[in-house]
Length: 114
Length: 109
Image (cartoon, rainbow over all chains, first blue to last red; front, top):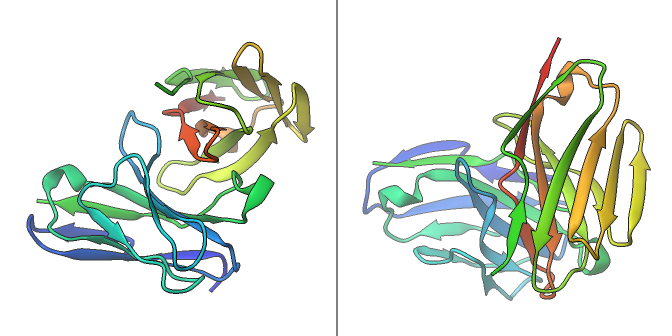
């Protein structure tokens, strides 16, 4: 693994189903993030984690949950998917402190909820 | 509320120079960032400004005026591979990044 890896890269999902997007990084970054990106809108923060064992809510957390059991992994779960959650999801990581704005992104997970 | 404004789309010619503007209104300021995102790919970091002035990095330069809430990204000697979206983001007082919607740059031969 080099950098940050997301899985799956693409998924079609029936409404009401549960879905977990996986994210793993090997850079030993303290901070990790989940964003969604929709056409015409900026990246919107769903949840974040400043360090292993802690998580926080971003701008659009409803319908999503995260966990950070260790430094490397930061899965995002949709408990019961709805069509408005159709989007491209990006996981990202960064070091802490003054370099926290330099994010390293995964390749994205394109999710379609029908 | 917090707001980042940048043009939706710009067109420029290969070999020319283009300036992409970004204005912001945020709760506090801890730096401004520019990212490049090719279609279907992840954003990648380009530049960081925290003090007023110009930061140059090869063909790309980024300028910041904190008093005006304004930044620009300057791309010189444009190449076809520069066709991408350019995202402006500001780190607010809570050290959270606030993102603009991005500027799609189209390069024509």
